[in-house]
Length: 165
Image (cartoon, rainbow, N blue to C red; front, side, top):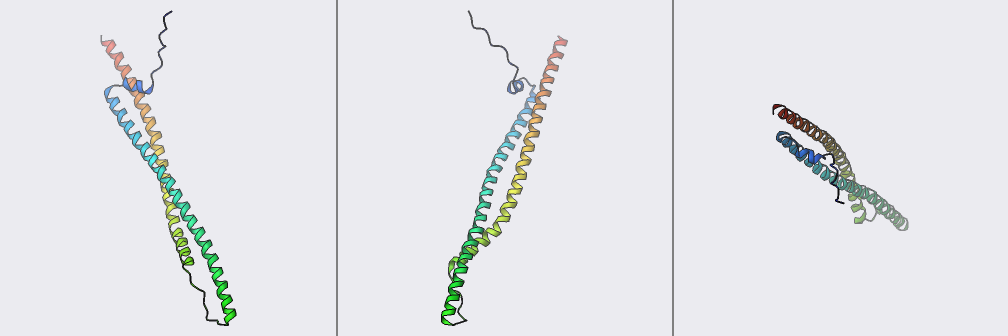
């Protein structure tokens, strides 16, 4: 028994695109390039968004860690200075300065200044990603319209040529 021939399947979008007239094919190629550009832009923006979230997390960690370390060092230095004042009866004795509270304060302030900027950037990037998503959805609809119009034009053109013959 000879193997049977496969049943013809309905044409896919790629096969339909090859059946389009040249002007519709040109429009479809332009649409595909625009869709690719929007997808690449969206993917790049999503990568930037993840880095922005990481930066915001790091800035928040700077604020929390710097504040905690600075406050703990301030309290311990203040208690040490208080103890020295009580022992020596010298009221002019001030806290001993160490660079740790200064560095902790610098980290906290840097985090406080950078965190709002990171959150603003994240908001803008989220809006741009949503804009690219809308452009991709609209581009897909335009692509389907081009294929539909092109197949209708090809079918209409084939019908008109068969009528002439």
